[in-house]
Each structure stands twice: as C-alpha cells, then as structure tokens.
Amino acid sequence: MSETTNPGFTPRIFSGIQPSGGLTLGNYLGALKRFAALQGDQAETIYCIVDLHAITVWQDPEELRSRIREATAAFMASGVDPRQSILFNQSQVSAHAELAWLFNTVARVGWMYRMTQFKDKAGKNSENASLGLLAYPALMAADILAYQATAVPVGEDQKQHLELTRDIAAKFNHDYGVNHFPITEPLIEGVATRVMSLRDGSRKMSKSDPSDASRINLTDDADAIAQKIRKARTDAEPLPGSVEGLKDRPEARNLVNIYAALADETPDQVLARFEGQGFGAFKPALAEIAVDALAPITRKMSEFMADPAEIDRILGDGAGRAEEVATPILERTKDIMGLLRSRP
Image (cartoon, rainbow, N blue to C red; front, side, top):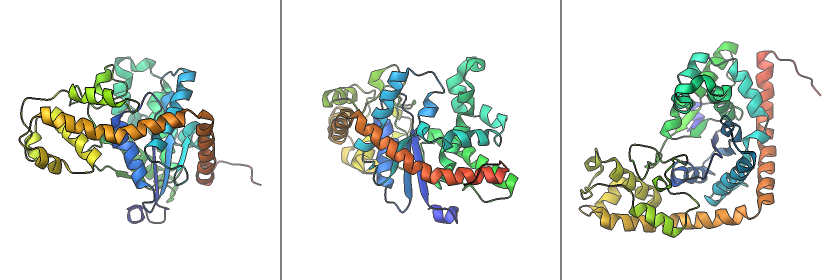
C-alpha cells in the first residue's frame, strides 16, 4: 500500500475523530471498526481525538473534557488497543499546532475558501466564523503530516480535506526542493463508509442532527436501537435481489448497507437472503444484528468511563509516544524552512 506510493517513508496510518458529541453507528462503521481492523496491517497506526478541531466552534469546557474521555472510551470499546496503536488527544502534542502554523504559510487562502465544510459550517454569516474554522484544513494536514502518515482511512465527506493535505505536502516539497512529506493516500473502503440518517437517506447520519431518531448512538441500549430501526424511514417496495434494484431508494439502500457492514457481508449477499421480503421482515433482522454488534461496545464504554483517571493515563501515555514520532519530523521541517533553533 504505502510502500509503493510513498517509497522511503515508513508505512504509517493516521486518523482522528472530533469529541463534539456522542458518537454514532456511523462513526463506528465508517471509522472505529476500520481503525481496529487496520491494527497490525503492516503499518504503524496512530489514532487521535482531535480536540483542537472541536474548539473551532465554542465548547463548554466541562462538556469537552467529558467528550474527550467518551471518545477515547469508544475507540477502545470498538477494538482499538492502546498497546498496539498510539491513542491520544491532539492538544497534548504541540507539534500539531506548530506544524499547522507552518502550513498556514504554505497553503493559499483560496484553497481554504473552496472547502465545502467551511461553507456548510459558516453558512451565510461567514464573516463571524472563527479564523480557526477557516484554517481547519491546515491543522488537519498537520495532524497527518506531523507523523509523515502514508495513508488515512477517511469517509467520502473528508476526501476534499485529504486532497488539500496532499496539495500542501506537494507544494512544501516543491518549494523547498525536498521529499520531506509523503503524498498521503486515502483509504476509502467498505460498504458503509458513509452511513445515512435513519429519517432521510440523502443525509449523513450525524451526532449534530436535532432528531435523536435519525441516528443510533453508541450509548443507546438494546430497546432504543430496536425502536429506532423499527421506525426508520423506508418505502413500500420489497427488497430486490441485487443492489441495482436499490437505485432511487436511498433509505432502503442505507439499511441494507448497514446490515452488510455489521455482518461483514456484501449488499448483494444480504439481498440474496432477503429478496422479495418487505421491511416488516428485514427490520427485525437488522435490529437483532445491530444489538448484537453494539451491546458489547456500549457495555465496554460504560466500564471505561467509570475510570476517568485511567483514560487520562492512557491518553498521556499515547501523547508521549506520539511526540517521539512527531518531534523529529517537526524539527526537520523547521530546518528545511530556515528557522533557527537551539541545539543540545
């Protein structure tokens, strides 16, 4: 994977999640489950709770601290092992913020204004958005390139930001005549990398959606999961025998994709089993497999959250290990740019 696309760089995978609210089934299938599966996949794995990104919009300090710990618990409950992977929160490693400033001098203002996520979050009142929200992609590039990550597992909605990371790396290497940063490759794979709302199959499942019925939270109990799936929007048509038959049926396609991802099957395999059946038969089967998959995660999250001091210890240990990787890369970046620094 990384060795062929980025020769000379250590194969290294980086990704992160914002601690901006309760995590959902979409976060699990699109990110956390994949993070755990990538451990030991012939590459170092570094996973981060990106709390500096979270504060690009105002956060209640006590809630933010709790959400950082909850996100950490979700990582571990989903199978991310802090002994196998480096797991930490972003703000504990200063290289992220330092490298982000250096990249602010490399990236162009026009690049930032073209980011669709800035347009979506800033809305019509963009003049009152924080500077951090506009510069968010430079910090994301720093998150990745502080570790010279060769690959990043991302959802489709983050692909544009990764393209900008690649542009920043390429411009830096070109401007200074070096091969210092890899051109990071996206890892976009799996049938449910973009899980959609249970109420609207055209919109992504989101923890910020005002309707709790639109999502399955990782903290939901079995009854809540079953009820949300039972009430999920569908249509009156029976399930087809292949994915071609799901065209123009976004809600049906979403539920089939969720089942496939939870069962580690393809959508066609799922449809072969349920062909001709209606959602009265399919939804109970989906609820059963969802409860079986998520109940252990909910239980483990609760156990981890009962010991916040241990979560803090794990994050501190991970931050120390992350610094060991990032600091030499940051210092070499400063040397390339001509910045003086004291030497031992």
